[in-house]
Length: 207
Image 1 (tube, rainbow, N blue to C red):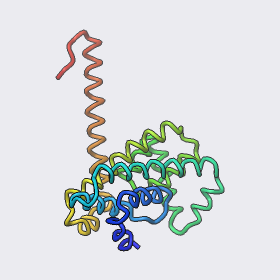
Image 2 (cartoon, rainbow, N blue to C red):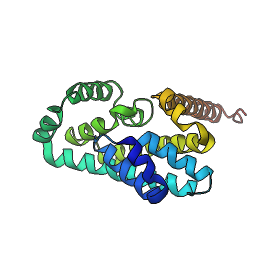
Image 3 (tube, rainbow, N blue to C red):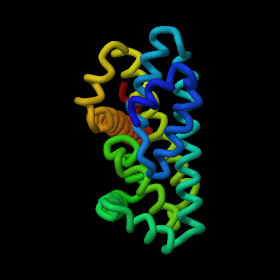
Image 4 (cartoon, rainbow, N blue to C red):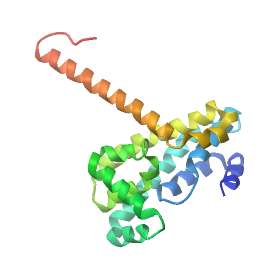
């Protein structure tokens, strides 16, 4: 199946990427990461346009997340029970639920970067458990931007080594992106705290 989909990338390009991302967000077995990297590789050779690949990937990701949230919000426990009955899925739901219990809203972002295999299941759980829709959407979109940019740029930069990269990467890109973003967030919060303290003390903020 993967080889067939990859062969369609030059023909259907960004539209195939959009559909793949949408379906993967619904927990359907679509090789979305390697498809996005492959599309990035074709962008490097001039067959596709990188920003269009990224935009369509993001659109598919966001729409898929919204559909999963809405389905679980309206379908409730019967839908979650049907999804859990699929082989191997119950364990993934348990891991997604544990992540949500441990990290709250941050889990939505983490499930789209560091723990991306749990993304679809956490999307369903967010709707089922009634997680705030605006908060879910914000965290999901930020995570989706990081994921789409990361995978498409990997394909763009390493266009001739996509197969080898895909076999090695696993969740490494999610870990890398997540780590960098967490570091950036900590740095930003630290700077904000320093500025607030300096303002309270009547001193100019530190550089």
